[in-house]
Image (cartoon, rainbow, N blue to C red):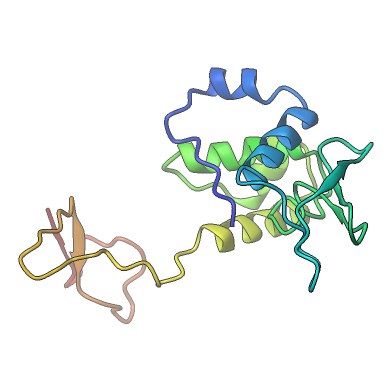
Length: 169
C-alpha cells in the first residue's frame, strides 16, 4: 500500500507540484520504488530493470514483465486523468467535509458513476484494517479529543441532540 499524505500541503503548493500527469506518475514511481525495484511476478523477484518508453514504467530484465507506477494502486484503470485523481485525493484528505459523487462529478467534469466508483476505491483504501494496535501498555496514556458514548438507537437518525448518546470531551 502506498500512502500519499498531503496533510500539511497548501493547495498552491499542491497545484505547483502536480501540474501534469507526468508529475503524478513521477511521484508514484518515486514512492513505489523508493527502496529499489523488485519484480512482482511470481517466482521472479529480480531487481534489475530497463526504463520503458511509457513514462516512469519499468521492465524486468529477467522475465520482461512491465511494471507501471500506478499498478496495484487506486489509480490503476482510471477513466480520467491521474492529475484529476490526485486532486480528488488531495481534496478529500485536506477537507473535513465529505463530498457526494454528484458534487465530485460536476466539480471535476467526470461521469457520476465514475466518480462514485473512484470514491468507493479511495474510501476502501483509507479504511482501517483494524490490525494497527495503539501500542498501549499498562500504565500508558491515550489522549482523545472527543468521542460519543452510546450505540445505535431505533428511530434516531444522524447527530440528533435529543438522543441517549453523549459527547465526551
